[in-house]
Length: 67
Image (cartoon, rainbow, N blue to C red; front, side, top):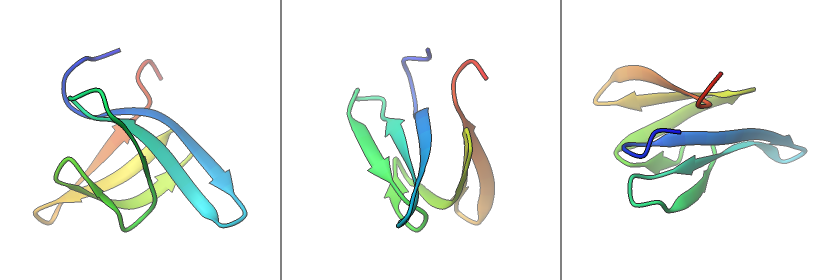
């Protein structure tokens, strides 16, 4: 698993909506939902094994490491 940058650890769907667990470069794990921000990225969507992001109007994605 990468040690630098943001790492997607998992995605989950609950009755109140999807969320994801992301580990930051400092090792801290954060639970995020669409609309949240982490590490300068805005979370725009969450799918199984995938988080859609946006930074400065540039879309991006985080995938679970190893998938």
